[in-house]
Length: 441
Image 1 (tube, rainbow, N blue to C red):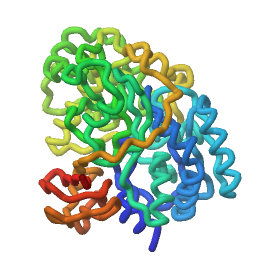
Image 2 (image 1 turned 45 degrees about the vertical axis):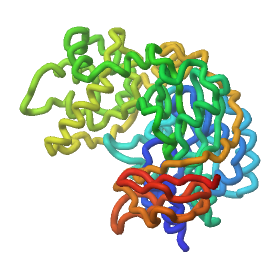
Image 3 (image 1 turned 180 degrees about the vertical axis):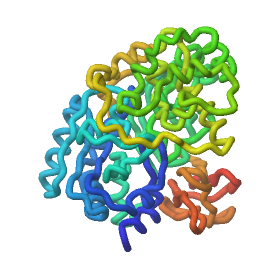
């Protein structure tokens, strides 16, 4: 069986957040492959723990992908501060015998952005609105690489590492079954505020969305941040979009601090958030350049961090992009900058500045332990785990399954992800959105 087939059958998708099916990504050619362990977001420690404890499998997966895509060079991109990870990976690389090196990065945000990592480590610049393959590079999260090594041995994706931080007594990184209810994780970590007053952000504080406390862990859930509903970050996120637009029209002073902080602008891309904010209030038949630059916004949120008026160009860009796509417009920004902005190295934002700015410093720990979460009594697995279409169930109500059993398949000719049982048990519910498995009593 080819590596592409093994990866597809294992249900592997990008674990860094986007969720693009990995079997499609690696069905290509590239001269360089990057294992991304930089953990873009503040507070997250999942990738750091994976690199420490599963360095051999990570390098094995990276080497398999390098061989498959014809790459002569591999990198593991990670923070200089990850000393234990660096030590473990150094040993694993020596044993592997491939042309792989560690790409040590500053503890800045968003150094885990694949565009920025490529520039930091090689000097290449990915075109506006483009993908790394356009500069003959392939980037995948370190957990994805581990899963590729496991898939080559016939092991499907049934769990993932998740960072638990915030208003909890036991912050930690846990290996948890896909489909585990968030409520189970809150109880396990011991909440420090009443659960009814808690807000959950899936992922990190800069880009992660607020999710329902009754949601479950998916393949892309890298972390869960538990905050009180009155926390300033929650209050800012809770402002309705129409109210944010009105605030922007009234309060934006055109200081251009959002543009000077913009990670894509620093790449040399044609995006200036302050110009978009200037025209936000005007209803125009023809979108301006400031508005169409929504196509190349990475949604990193540095514009929010920089704004002295607490406005959100990021959210405005997301709203504009939705409207432009609804109108059938395509991305007009496709140039490849010859070099990044001349001040790029001097405008990097340290992650510590972000945690201080958003009142998160007390939650920031780099010593989180990796533990195994107990098998949950019930899991609810979403049929839409990846970019693409929902998977189609191949099981029926009442079926007995064991961990690793295929329960939903990618529709023929479509983009998506295979789905496997994450615990032993019985299928008790099948809907258009989920498959529920109850474990043995």
